[in-house]
Amino acid sequence: MTVIELVQGDITRESADAIVNAANSSLLGGGGVDGAIHRRGGPAILEECRRLRASRYGKGLATGKAVATTAGDLDARWVIHTVGPVFSATEDRSGLLASCYRESLRIADELGARTVAFPAISTGVYRYPIKDAARIAVDAVRAAKTDVEEVRFVLFDERAYEAFAARLR
Ligand code: ADP
Image (cartoon, rainbow, N blue to C red; front, side, top):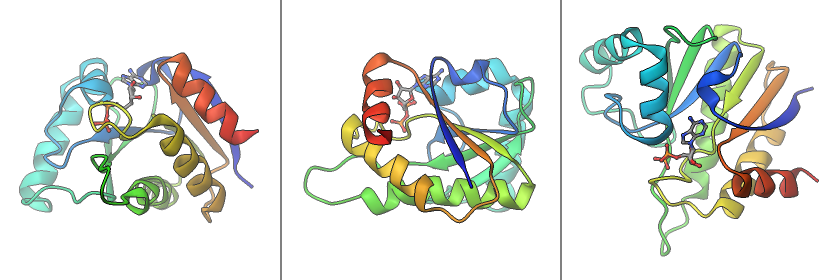
């Protein structure tokens, strides 16, 4: 059984087997949590992302997929990079957002990670409404068949924390 925990704070300060990054398909870094992870994790993460781009993801990592790298200087063994969907008011992209959580946990299982920290994927620059994103995230993790023992959602601000707490209750 997977225990779900909530923390309000900066995911780059967390200790876990794997820390999930809300990356973009280029894998070459960006703003928000992606920028923070690369800043605190140091250059080793970007180096491995560049190699992945060159070897397997020439066209970029597809939305809803995930791939792991070293965690560099972070207090973790791996960073799992996943690409969330950009929110659309006209198209339902919840399946892609759920896939980010599912695929990240599948990669975590492959690695043997037992504790995984997630940010609220797609809720920053990609504009997913926090209430919808919280429902999709919590439900996807609850439904996942995984050996991960602890999933920790690390929410940057109080609004996000409250949205996840409401869905968990
Ligand atoms: P996306 O492009 O998937 O929307 P963002 O990084 O813009 O990704 O935002 C995703 C979420 O991560 C937002 O809720 C944002 O507030 C949050 N966030 C930004 N920095 C951090 C951080 N250091 N730790 C945890 N969450 C963060």
